[in-house]
Length: 146
View (cartoon, rainbow, N blue to C red):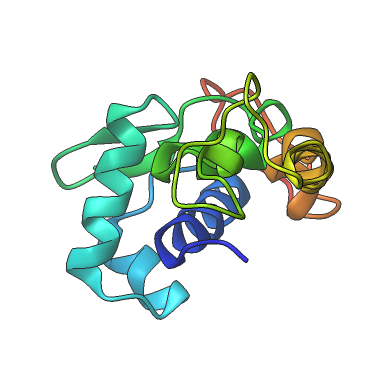
């Protein structure tokens, strides 16, 4: 359902949520846990940093962390970095043209409804919810209960 890069991004965000407030996680550690190619994942993580979803720090204690608490970061915020998932209907489903509400095709109204309904759980679900019963500490306070 999701492009591979967006899937890796969500999985990385969940892993980082599990360490939220505890420590930064290095790209090679994330890649190993996810079973992702390190270089590919590094580019994905750096894209998330540039978009403000993650923060990063270089050096011996460096690595990646979520830019905000897992309970405030929606799955949609993570995947939207890697494509126009908000507007999947940007192309007409019946013709090779842009989707146009002013000149809709026969499928337009139904397709827009389908894409909106499919997106709602991504907007309503947080990365924190995907982690289950974990409790987060403030990012400035070390420690996390697992």
